[in-house]
Length: 242
Image (cartoon, rainbow, N blue to C red; front, side):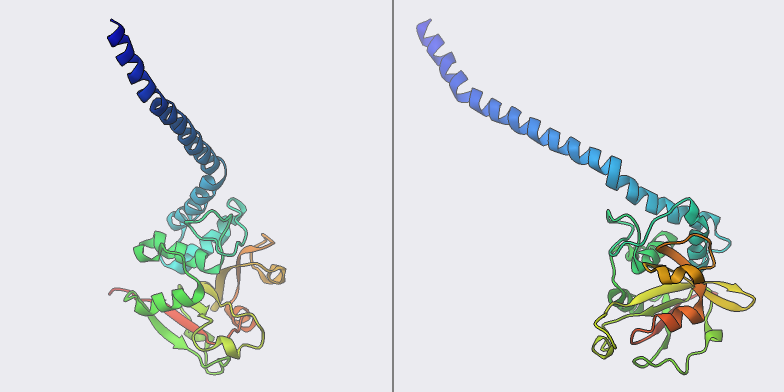
């Protein structure tokens, strides 16, 4: 009997510390997971869902299925889905809103181009579009030179961008080496307009929508191009299957 008691005591001494460690570790892990879940549900997760819902609703309600019409519809719906400009913001991160490329490639992803889920800057998006068979480069200027460009050549859905970094950043007049991008989203009385995401109060007075402040903005293509000249201007067009 004494021997049995000793054996049981030894087992308890050996097993009990591991049980305590396992229970403590489980409790810590469970608390951490719960806290992460609460944080995502209450703060970050709702932002990602909201951005995605914003684009999906715009696709459903837009008058056409091209990326330009979707961008325009997003601007129309902005009074319900105010998402301010946020550098680095796209459909996958926890930033509050979009930046210029996050806005564009988010639309492209939900329109059905699966490879545009990844985060892009303007230079990376330029290279991606060059390689994508669904799009064609229809215009590329010399550095800081668009004299030969004709606004009448623009079409609905054209992606208008300054992909800073393709041998042009060192020629820019300032230290700003960031590019910019927008989409031809509307023709009003034959005049092309571009929708983009931007952080600048300078655009408030030329935005055709009443919503002011940073975020999604629609203005005349001529004004957009004249305000945002940053090195090489490139224009891509979605190929249409006949």
